[in-house]
Image (tube, rainbow, N blue to C red; front, side, top):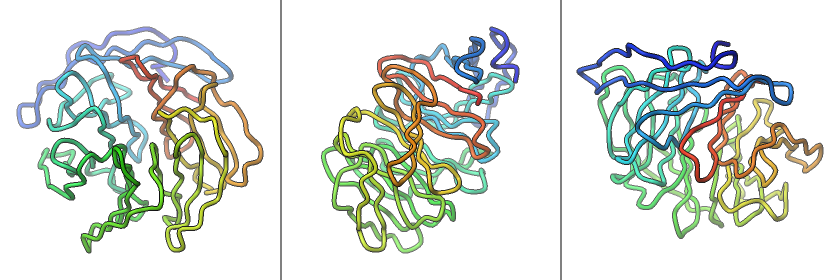
Length: 274
């Protein structure tokens, strides 16, 4: 894992004339921490946010910089590739199940962009949406709304369903039948067929927070005032995975061997190899 073992600055990024420019991503290894290796991911363009692992785990999708652009970072090469503009400070990203496209929300609502030729396709106007997730079968999207309740959108039928509460962070369970939602300091699991809510954590989570599922569908990864934590959907077996003050927007790689998260008020991302 070259990111974790040495500080480095990657030079010689390739210019991609059809899709924009691959620029330098500075990746600095910081040694061992709490049983895993940790690295800082930064770029000259400034802030990185909305980070999500590609299905293969070797690339992350991001929003970046003062112009709210969308791109990818190759974690091995350490290069940032610009794909398109149109993001916002609320932007979240999510990969298609096959990894051939990225969905993101921004100034034009939710947009799909192919990662090979960079073609964009409008999906849903989703005004003031924040965060974003795509179900494992690629059929639905879930997102929060700034100042309103969260939504679930079925792509094929163009049907948007409003949930009973706002979600500052929202993610589909692996089976697609439920979502995890951080809402006003609580962590809940919502059954999409019935609307029934199961409270996992009742209170005291930060307003800006992140959540993701483990692949077994019985455990959640989330950010708290202490850092990145794990908990069962039954509310049992709460465990601090990594101490990090003001951690937000956490994402777990599909192989569950890596975590990426942002820190509120900081431009860089943190990559934790478990």
